[in-house]
Length: 343
Image 1 (cartoon, rainbow, N blue to C red):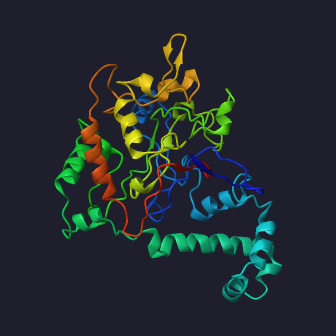
Image 2 (tube, rainbow, N blue to C red; image 1 turned 120 degrees about the horizontal axis):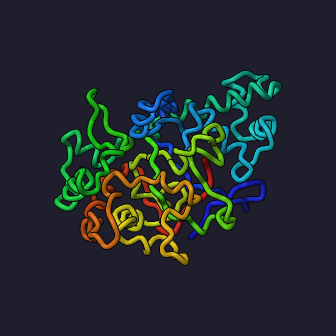
Image 3 (cartoon, rainbow, N blue to C red; image 1 turned 180 degrees about the vertical axis):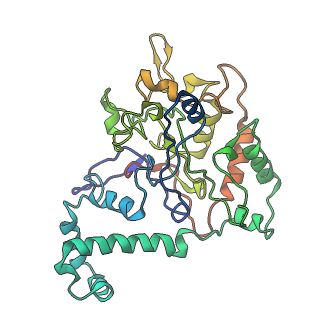
């Protein structure tokens, strides 16, 4: 597997797969969590997942905040501080355009120039058509301008079936009441129990765990341990073009990602390591937090040796449907290429 490295010497690895920014920008709600002050409300809250925000852990509410993270992260672009970044912009081929847009003397005030650079990134992400082209065959199908073939239709049915894949409960695929096309995400957070990824260097340390909403990158939720292991549900648009799946990039083919999803509990030994007492399920979280993993929503309610909700042919059918979500300009990523960097 090829890993995309960053840092000042281009030799630093991150701990998470790079999430897509397409589509989820101008319709992503701000981070929201229900706060409770009674036992009755606490019971109700158990059925309400947090949602919104940018990044796998939703810790950014504004796009310019999200943009600042990779610019300053030591294992990504590794700028020392805003002034360092501004000096690089001042030497860049587009410096003249930057001055023309923000003022001839903009670089004399590094903090202002930094803020303008982040605002420019945010404006580009929100308004450039390339970030939300809605040019997939599925978009054309929703508008009655294309048809799905028999295999794609079977895949869509399996995707929607609440008693089988139940995918649409988190990756809604219906038009909105206003006719808007779906983003294939509810922006909610879910604890799926994805296996630990040995390709991530941080995971060599037994004490290290990426716990999503409660750390290590997000700090404000550290005490809310009931949310440990939760990561934001990504959009499935262009998912068939990716080379790394789930927050830690544990799987590198769509087939394996879907097999894990439907066989996590029916064939756990296929996905998790074995210890002295048997298979160690949900091994990427400390034992005390493994009860947070979803075992109440289909198909995550299955048990060992039961038949999974999809067989291999049905997985192929679902993949055929997922390929219809690729935008017209998307070139599929080679299955041996993954990225582990970014928030």
